[in-house]
Length: 280
Image: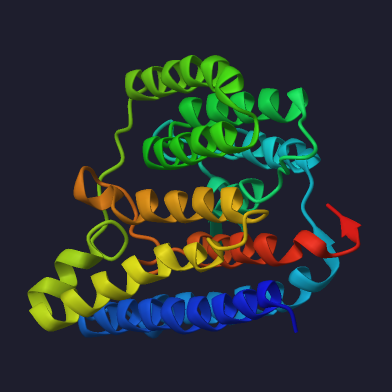
């Protein structure tokens, strides 16, 4: 086993353990807050499903830059569904709603390669930012936009960044202009406050587990070929994880939300799939 494969295996173990700890502590917080098992059990079930997807996709799928187009389709489908108070972020499957951005964006960030520059990929990223702005989804736009800019700078150079930065800034301005009337939900956006009210130790453990989970892709830092994607994915995870500090935004993995659990697993799978034979 090569050193690169060893690091990948170590990342899989670290992410699996840390993400499970985050999900478990979040489920415990929701259970102690009096939520029904039908709610607090969903994240652990999603973790199992995400782990299964990881085991399958990391072996057979190599994300390619063309992934931005199915990602755009998924984000666009959100506008077909009724939405909530004019906010369109979700795909509805019966009683289950999935935040399309949270599911697909981590995988998109792993789909570019420095040796295959693609102007269409850059255009696709700009269109994704426009969709997020119009939904609106400020936390996802900020996390994805910053991570994408860092990825562009690492893989395409300063000239591409010079074009991409104004697009990202314009998308963020549009997103801030769009009204977002949704009120926070205690077990989604406020789960850290719920944990702190129950036990400072529980809150500290939950925040530590989430932070370490977000930083886990940096385990691949020594591998220069995977470093840009690992840095971008970890940055996206980290900015998503701290969004609750500056607004009423979901807490990934810790708060109720199947989409983040599945999406984070898919993002890590994208890092593993780099050397796989087929493409997505």
